[in-house]
Length: 321
Image (cartoon, rainbow, N blue to C red; front, side, top):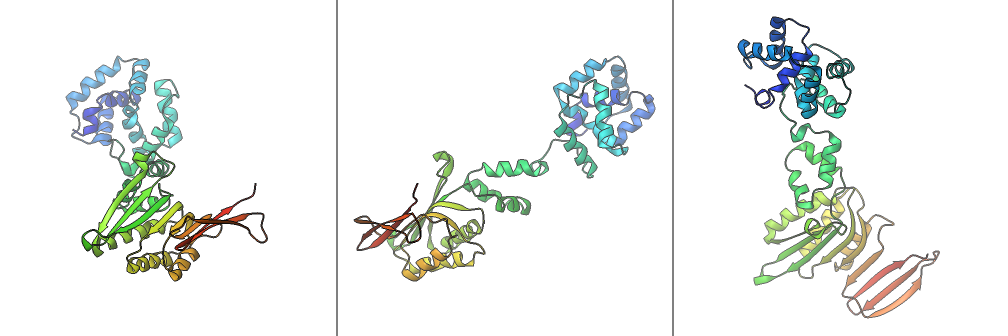
């Protein structure tokens, strides 16, 4: 016996009531066409038929109200016997004496059975409407989103069409025991810290390569918008070049609002060129903090704050009210 029939015996009662105008023999044959020849014996069916004969409409309605999955056999039967979705919905509403049924659930099962999938058991993750899958993806934290990309091509496509759930990236290199360690922190500045913050360290060339493959996927998402991007790596020009190569390979400009980095001049120019025009509001080079000036921007009412010391420059554009 299928799991559905085992877990929903009342579904057969509702089905028998739905098709009650047919004779006992014809109805048993029709039920077998719906659920399979060996799912219920003639003796078991006879007992159900006798029980339903004495049931009232309100009792059937109560079975449906308590668990709408009790309608699935009726819906599947209508699909098998070529009834339209409107005809099926009308007949089922007439059977239970009310139109107060879950329309979305009814439509889901009718369309699922019509597609050739006659499995009566509960929906799987892949059966969910695309809108629901998108909502699930949108509310996952970043590590969960990246793991979900590996499940299937369909989920990867959904992932890559949604805005990533992070808006801050911080890269820092340390050198414990003379071995380079690249520390990556990713953050959602608007979400709860427990869900939005993620940090990981990568040791050695192979692991850093794995990191950059993941970062490339993230940066290639045209919906990514970074409020903060920080690159604090002073000991490895090779890593700098690898990262800028990823930036240059993207087919779109990256949105960054605040940029702090210590690339050398040529790589810094490459990075700034890769940023979407009109999105960058603050930019810092190297070490900064000590002297300050404010300058008018030609052709604009805005001003530019500039902080300078011997090691770096920090720019902030101030928009006039």
